Image (tube, rainbow, N blue to C red; front, top):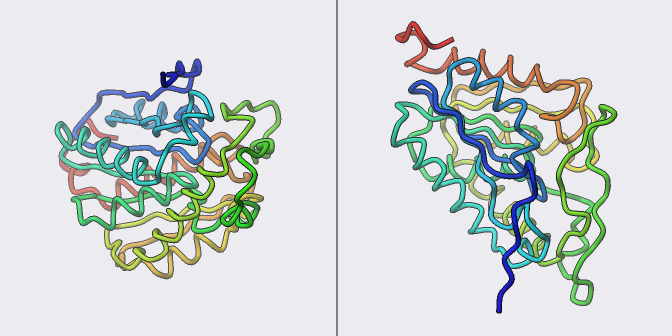
Length: 257
């Protein structure tokens, strides 16, 4: 009989009902919505409708992550978008790390998006690359989350399934191929120093998407999990500026921003 695991305390999806502008926030590989909780709460305090789904296999037990296919995660973010679109006139999508890759995949589908914000979005993870052809090892130990700020706790699995790593890498190959299909306004945020995803990944995204309106921001004082690091408020501030710039709804509604 298949075992079902409980959601780790603090790792579940969160939703805040607000105005007609929806913000979908997607966490990264082996992360949970807890990693984007701060920015989500800040956007909610500005009046936005905010939804951060928990990707399948995350925030429970690594055995469940092992059983996932990357299409499950693409479906997760598409379903989350569809949920927001039912009550929101506009939807912006924010994705961190693998969440950034998923956001790019969503944008490539030509769904009506007002904008996309990627944070240290992944096209490659060098430390994982050798596992693409691994046939004997089932799980590997996970390193400490890449966060510059001290005393910050991120909910992650201590062990990561090699099968899930392979799915991540296949997703990233797919993402690189669809970049030219992304044409909505884009804000590309990268940390100057990132020990998981090379900052050049964000440069490649910026160069290869077809968006006419696009902007790149550098975080000087954060590592990979930037939404939990020193520059987390800068992420919020720059995203608010971006939304004000590109949203047709903001200027028409007195209760927004």
